[in-house]
Image (cartoon, one colour):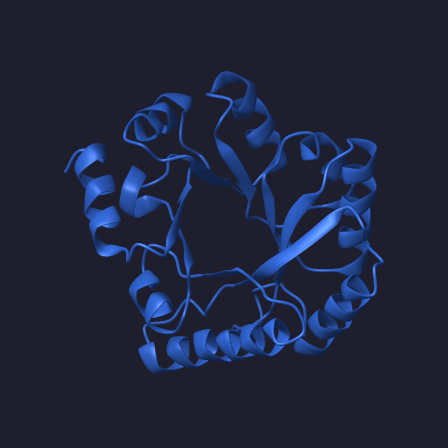
Length: 217
């Protein structure tokens, strides 16, 4: 299938209220422009360096989402333009984003990344840490940040029962926090498991290889 067919195939499987983040990491500008031309506006990158190289060379109305692990010393490079940082996994990082957002006279939207996977390789906040950070945010500690939701990555396993359990766990936390302040974004699910994520309540999915094909490293 061509990129256009793959993109349309994915779009046709998403309910209207589910946002597609096209994960463009390790894909060239030409491919991103192609998907942009089909109407896609939200693109996800894992690395700051790569996002910075692509951003000036692509249309200015693209919403760039940083979805990979972010080091505090790199926040300043993307703070002027990033639309959302989905991978906030520490208070230190949140403080730095707040600081850089203020310098750029912006409010930056973020998602708290919660560790839901039962395997040890995935990063993220423990539930207690996420609740504590959210409380500090509600108390006004990060005025240049808007926490709009949660992000999670399920275990990379074939066991659908386990994956569903992990997604459902994050949905419950999302609902709990939403009782204190309404959250809008529950980002779960990638190329292999986005159907299951949507079933469990995701309203934002991060799909890369199913649109762009396999990455060239």
